Amino acid sequence: MSTTIASSSAEFDRRARRRLPGGVNSNVRLAAPRIYFERGAGARLYDVDGKDYVDHLLGQGPNILGHAPEPVQSYVSSAVRRGMVYAAEHEEELIAAEQVCDILDWPDMVRFGVSGTESVQAAFRLARAFTGRRRIVRFEGHYHGWLDNTLAAFPAEGGCIPASAGQVGDYLEDTVITPWNDLDAVRQRLAADDDIAAIVTEPVMLNAGAIEPCAGYLEGLRGLADEFGVVLIFDEVITGFRVALGGAAQRYGVTPDLAVYGKAVAAGWPVSLLAGRADLMERFGTGEVNHSGTFNASVMAAAAVRSATATLRDTDPYDHIEKHGQQLMEVIRDASNRHRLGLHVQGLGMAFHTSFGPEAPITDYRGVARTDGAKYGRLARFLIEHGVWVAERGVWYVSAAHGDQDLHDAESRIDAAFRAFARSEVA
Ligand SMILES: Cc1ncc(COP(=O)(O)O)c(C=O)c1O
Image 1: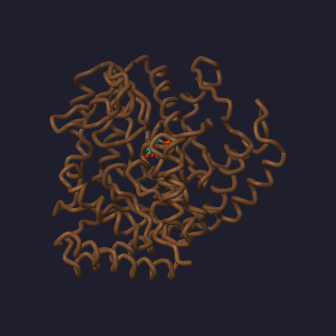
Image 2 (image 1 turned 60 degrees about the horizontal axis):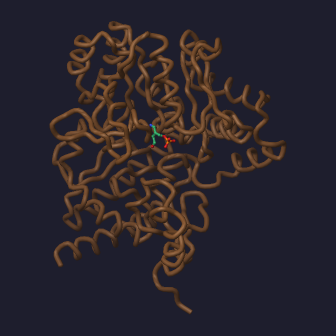
């Protein structure tokens, strides 16, 4: 019997909407087509209707080694046979912490968490305790989690507003919103306000566009943080262990005071880390600053970090990922030209962004806001229908598991998707 497209997915979705609000467990997934996956392996996802997808969303970034990487899955599975949470210390967490500090090279200490959202909060609290100040300089278009003091929309007139009903808008009042890649704007904010505790930045802007820091920008932030005595926090939740083994700090040669890691640090397992200098981090150790969590450094989390970071260190897949991504960007540009789509493609091989407009390279959130997101959303649906799993917001990720066959299949599927899209837009 032949199956109609996503017949089982459609059936599961009907059931899910009764028991899961919107049929999903993260609002980020509300916009995506409801496809139920049976499994992921390497660079592929397989849905319940038997169709495969070349995966360029990678779970929103974590699957840097592809789906179900054997060394990590085996190591974690065997570790958790010894139990999961002890409410006490264990060797695995110590070794993972030592290894991460060795690999990153700059932090003295780390604290485990479960999600990027909460480790960002730990960083803010530490920065406030350290400086005795309150406000945080952050940037238009950057994402630092879904809690009331970080979730924000960025209206054209500047500043930020709550992005959700039920959000306490007052919590955003301690946020000083600033355009990114503009050092003068940061200097102005710091000079005008003596109550700034920290600057927090995605060191490569990957939640809106894929925008690299301009030459000297991160160094400039470092200099301003030192000049005004504020804590520099890199939110490396996406960039950490992705744009280089040592993340953006290594790639761009700039050392923050604190950094938050998540996603790739555990190759798909739910773990975050706050890393930092001893004089800051020790404040957790003295008990002066509270950071708690039942699941912090569970055996699963520690084993996943230990195994994922060792695998990344020992196999060094970064040249391969970068090259594959560059080739894929060319494939997309060629197909866009062939079908006269005028798609704009920019970023790094390991994480890049595609959009309709603008003509020139995008350097800040205002550039991203000028792109045609609705049109790109329609294109993303054609890509998914043709077997390339991508985000509707335009970001593409590449993993160590992507190989020649994946590129080959992606090329023919992208071509078919773009052709069908071009036809549908004129129809
Ligand atoms: C830069 C950045 N910071 C923080 C977060 C929040 O991490 P989590 O979703 O693990 O809470 C994300 C999530 O995408 C992110 O991209």
